[in-house]
Image (tube, rainbow, N blue to C red; front, side, top):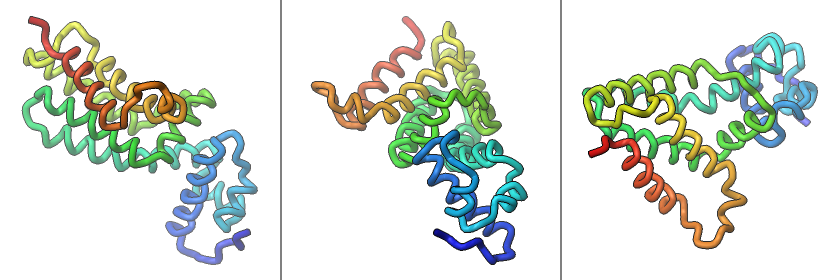
Amino acid sequence: MNKPATTRDPELTRLRILDAAEVLFVEQGFSAVKLSVLARSAGVTKSLIHHHFGSKERLWEAVKNRAFERYFTAQMAMLEEAGEPNAELLRSSVEAYFYFLRDNPGVVRLFAWTHLEGDSHCSALDNQLVGAGAEWVRQTQMRGLLRQDINPTHVIAVFVMTCTQWFEAKCHHQHWPGMGSDEAFLEDFMKVFMEGVLPRD
């Protein structure tokens, strides 16, 4: 059991709490984690957790935001640096999200706990990124490079939900007869997805 932290560095204390909370939330989900256990794990007092985050709910949001922030930053940079809208950026965005989830199984578990526990809170990062992606799809549709009879937000939702479910349910579907590797699935999904969003002849 960790002893209460003696450091007077507020940022270091905050990071210790976030690190401990992420480990526990990934393992147990939000509902099962008790603040007393979290405090012991982080080596702080419960009052310090309240001081830095206000509540367990706000700490949960901070953990989710930090876990998602690296992908958010990279994807927003891709959108900002893309220049003129084109279909290839959509392909690159799908691949970036897929590999982000593959390389960050803790994030996948956080997403799974969010869904299982009926957490309906949509973070500001999530909203901002989906909004920016949908706007980019809309502009690409207006240029005639993607079919115009699909809701732009649904285009984003299709690849986000497919990639997320692939990794959330992998322990189950990896045993299906003929199921291929991550790379093989992504290759086939990209064929179906990209051909589906391109303009009809």
